[in-house]
Image 1 (tube, rainbow, N blue to C red):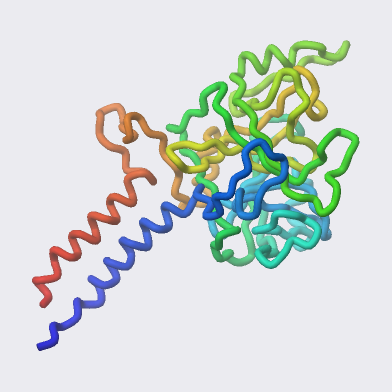
Image 2 (image 1 turned 90 degrees about the vertical axis):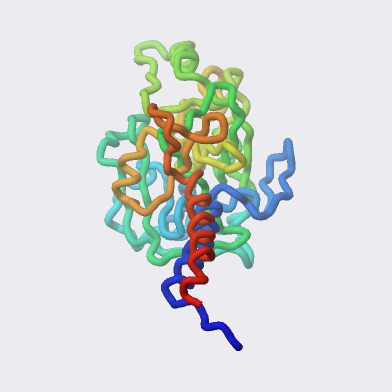
Length: 324
């Protein structure tokens, strides 16, 4: 005799548990794993969160997809946040000229610049761009993980910066304008301040690296982000997930000696991001495999959510006999 089906609420619980676990694992995991070590050109699908922010059809800033509807970028990219009709966002592209079949253009609904931003090279140079409609995730369009303040990016940690910016201060990225990638080490703030105090132009006060800034690059110069890369992501591999450490903000020139790139620390603006996107799941840091609070209790963050989802599914199966 056919057994009756579980009631609808139980089926819903099963579905939510499996879907929740899938959604939390979506960020920071490119599905195209043909990474080319030591190269300059990015591969198709290698950095699926990278976007091109365009004004009147021309690329002017980078950004990173953090949810199906939101892009993280730099506040200095937008002089007028109200004229959203001028902007569009290109996702899933490797090259800007003839982006190809995997690319999608999205219209912009609104731009939220951090209210603490006070101009070029100041703190809080971050903005959030809301897309007109949510984008579908594919092998070429996926979000990067956003860290909560428990994630620490140590000095000398090797991370990656990506963008379609100029290869030098004088040159424009040649056609077909293929996405570029560069491995850069994290530089601690005291050392970065020391570098920026060297060779200062006479009469000018050396720039100071603020608390919400992060330096990455090389003291000898030669490799760096440049014009057109602004707003793009600096990402690091943390617990097998790509996590965004910084937003490309400023630097004196490009790849100059003693002038490494300066990024805005994403963790410094956790509360502001959370206030605008309350549904965003943040990536937690780990200590010994689990992130714990001061009382030694496991923190309920993104890392533990898939386990909770699995327990929900198991509980649902244990409850099945009661409904049969």
